[in-house]
Length: 96
Image 1 (cartoon, rainbow, N blue to C red):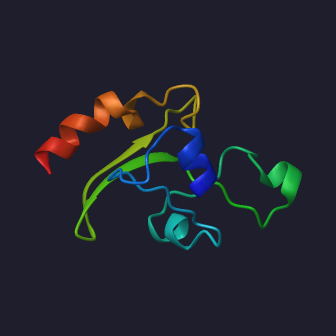
Image 2: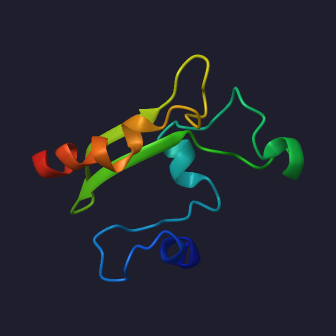
């Protein structure tokens, strides 16, 4: 995740954190497992879970905003990620 953060140009001093969910515990706990799209399971095996495209505003461990980018024709949110991009999240961050 450190490499991805660096690749995206996010400085180490940023308030933005990149967090891995390698065992899918958070994905399962938040009920955001992508079930209608083959995703990595088609290549890596059925045990590989992918989560829906999401963005959260978390303040002191409390989720203040939680957005899922999905549509009936885009369950992964890959084609229509707008709700989770910075322009949509900034007002939610300010409100938190």
